[in-house]
Image 1: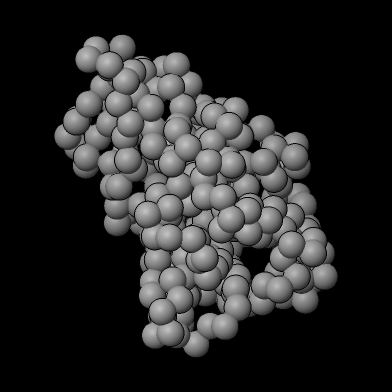
Image 2: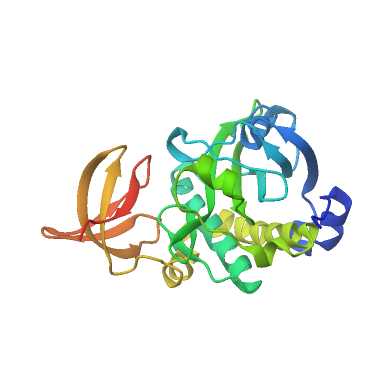
Length: 262
């Protein structure tokens, strides 16, 4: 039986790192990221917004994120940023570290695909979308959205149209406990990121790198821009790609990464 999400239950289970974060739960909305971006002028402290169902969930590069009550865990966290904007390129990767380390600690082995996907057995288990918005008072807010597949009903997989992963073990957990574990680790990582940027996380990210040493292709929509061997990330979150002409650093932007054709 699926546990009902409860603001009070999540808050009660959070570590001290997340004790200052307000929690809201809604049954349905278009996009939790869009909702929080529209509210930044009224926010005074971090806010987590969880939706049982999103009807217009978004991924990177304008892609849709499909969800279904009980089958997915979808949420966004609004976080006031202290660091300079140029540091933000590494934020999605630091978030990936937080989510992957938490899910691994709960007994589900996952790896990271640059720049912002979590893979289980080579298929996508979770995705991350980070957007920024300036408030009227000058505060820069990062709105960090995540969607995690807990179960994958046939109808939802057919809608998605490609192989995706699920984590039935996590689906058996109390979802308030799961959300509290994710939020606690995420809050601790974000506080550290505010102080250090991504440099403190590059080694942890590389230890979870799914495609280390594999031949990959960088794509912009359907066009292949560059090929090489994926060698992890640097301290700013750029992908290090060994090519025929030497090593290059790739900034994420809206490009995507695929395994190169054999």
